[in-house]
Image (cartoon, rainbow, N blue to C red):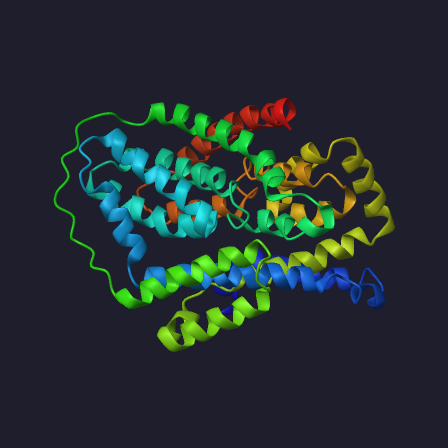
Length: 373
C-alpha cells in the first residue's frame, strides 16, 4: 500500500499522530514527562484484551454462528431488521461498539441483499450504529471513553452502581428512540432461501477464549492487575492461534495514545486551559457533547476530563456526543465506510437519514440527562 492509500485508509491514525507530534512543540518537554502514562497504558492494554478475544471468536466463526442462529427462523422483513439492529446492541455491551459494527454490519449487508431488501440498507445500517452506541453505554468496556473514565474509579471515588446509575436513564431512553425509529422499516412477509450453515471451528479454543473474556472482565473491575491478565491473554493466543496477532487492528490503540498526548498538551497550554475551564465550569455535559461533534467522543473525553470533578457529566456527555455529525463517533465512520463500498447506494440519502435519526436521538437524550442526571 502506498503512502496515499495508507493515509486515506488510516486518516484518523495519521491526524491523531500529527496532532500529538505538534503538541510536543507547544509544551515544555519536562511537562510531557509528567503525563499519567500508566493510566493510558492500562486502558490500552484492556482494549487489547478484548480486540484479541473478539478476533479469536471471529477466527472460530463463533460470532457468525451466533448471527445465523438469530435469523434462522425469521419470516417477516421487520423482524429480520429488528434482529440485525439489536445484535450489535447487545454484543456492544460485551465486545465494544466498534467491534460489534465491524462484525454485524457486513453481515447485515449480505443478508439484506439476499432478502432483496436493498432499500432498507441505509436505515438498518444507521440504526445498527445507534444501537451499538446505546448498548455500549451499559458496560465499562463497551467503548473506549467509558473504559477511560471507569479506570479513574479510584481517583473519583465512585462505585460501580453510581457509574451504572449515571448511564441507565440514557440507555433506556436511547433504546426507546431506536424502537420508535424502527417504525419506518418495511413490514412484509419474507421469503428467505436457506442460508448456508456456518460450522464452528476450533471448539476447544472457544472455551479458552470465553474463559479469557471472563478474566478480562474481572480485570476491568480492578480485581486482577492488568499486566497479569495481559501476560495470560498474550501467552494463551501465542499457544492457541498465533495467527490472530496479524488480524487485530492495532490502529485504535495508537489513536488512543496519540490523542492522550495531544489532549494533555492542550490542557497544559494556558490560553486553551482558560477557555476549557470556563466552558466546563458552566455545563460539562453539554460542552462535551458539542466538542465531540468536531473531535469525536474519544478525544473529547481525554481532553475535557481534567477540567471537572463531575465525571458523570463527561461520561454521559461523551456517550450522547457520539450522536450528531458523522465524525462524532468512530462507530459512525465505520458504518459509513461500509455503506460507501456499495456501488448502487446513495450516500446523500444515507447522510440525510443519518442526520435526521441522530438529531432525534440528541433531542431525546440531552433532556433525559437533565431530568435524571
